[in-house]
Length: 454
Image (cartoon, rainbow, N blue to C red):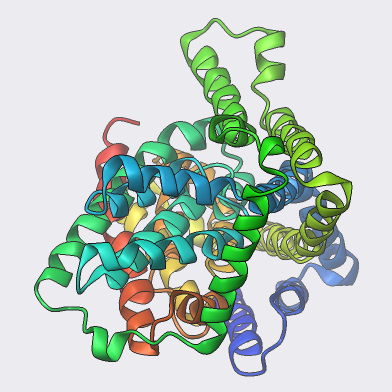
């Protein structure tokens, strides 16, 4: 019976979001309340599980999400990513740029706020597209998709990655150690396969491309802002390397802490410096100092305000995902799922990975949000994770890959992508929906191969 109640709760969440357009935060709380009461936790027990689940996940990832959003907002204002990709275009040329963009977006800019990356990257993708020929916009759009969203689910500090790690109790250093190479290889292979399909006629500029007047106006404004920064304030703009330090330094600190722990030479100081909270805070502090020097106090405060406006909803969605996981953990559903997934039931590791991927993929198809799908799937699986004969990080990566599957029209990101890239709905279905499905499938065998050595 508890399985039926769980199915009803999850279906109710999906229908509330998709059919009635209810916010994911409200929908997840309603689903948690129903499951707790129907599962026999009682009124007080249900509320206690929801509150403690929310508090637990906030203790794990709350500061990380807040710091990441604010840092991304400041980097956006300083145009760090624009200058980086412009440099890559000059150095690598147009042919290699899609691969470079995908790799850089995945490894160096796994922004918690993916809309920032989309806004930053789309004009650069459009400007480089003509140099790639007839399929240029399709190719750059697919590379942008792979770079942004693969990093979002595999690489710290992507929101999907942090949420999965927090809900499954995976150390962020461990998630970075394995997620970074999986993310980079997945992004590059996805761009390669997608490019081969474009060469065989997959993209049709006549039907897949459509630049609106609003897009042209946005490009004009962006050029004007760039000219202003190159004018009177040019002397105050830091070098590209310095602009990237707020991202590079935290990644190096976290990676060094992970290596030190694995190699057995870690101590209290190294553990302190490698702590992800401290690392991201120092990145935020560095971005703030650079922004104050580059943009002035007013523009810096404006950028931070935009970041603060974004942080609240992200924290709430993440927190109530933890609440759903806590409620599931308090019901008998954990025992039922444990029997289904456990090695005692004869379930091979590869099948466990496939099931974790499938749960997240189905949730994403239904809900239309990568982060909500990742959070919900992690909440479902986390109570029985200890009974599975597979490393938690492998399960986390499988969930991330599944949550990436086929981002489509029920996501606001889809419509942002269409308008900012200047593509039609069919173009967005190819450069975004198909590419995310391709990346999700490409990552699956890589994760299975990794499970053989982890």
